[in-house]
Image (cartoon, rainbow, N blue to C red; front, top):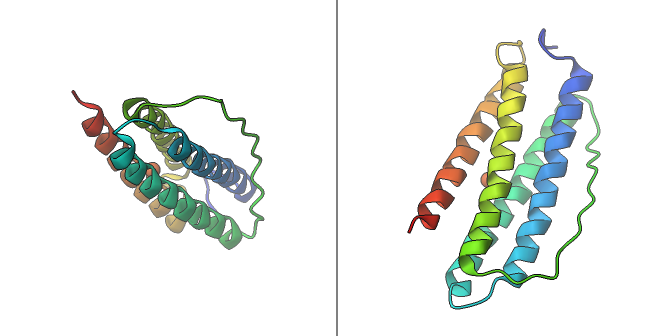
Amino acid sequence: MTQGISRKEAIDRLNGLLSEEMEASMRYLHLGMMVQGLDRLIVQKVLQDNLEETLEHSEQVAEKILQLGGCPAPKIRVEFEEKRYSGKEALQEALLFEQAALDGYRDLLEHVDGGGDVILEEFARQQVSVESEHVAGLKMLLEE
Ligand SMILES: [Fe+2]
């Protein structure tokens, strides 16, 4: 196992990320329902793509947990506001989810970087790259 981080700590961190990804899926699903106005036509597509990606990421994180001999055990408590969003507001929300995911994977990478578990290290690095692109993409959409 890694020198820098114990197997248990790696599993705990991955379960934290799994919780975040699954929560983000539900939030994307809800945002897609609540976005209004003409932008709805375009923004719903972005939200749907992001929803699918969070589901994919959830599966990938769960796979890593299983590979480490752990059990995927997300802790999720989500409440949704009775609120409608303009296209721009929905994208601003999405940016928050993506930034949170990026921070989470960055944190994981810091803990496994050079620790000896190459699979986990590469996974964390790849996720940092993917989430950075999502953040950058959303920022471009939000530019005036
Ligand atoms: Fe993302």
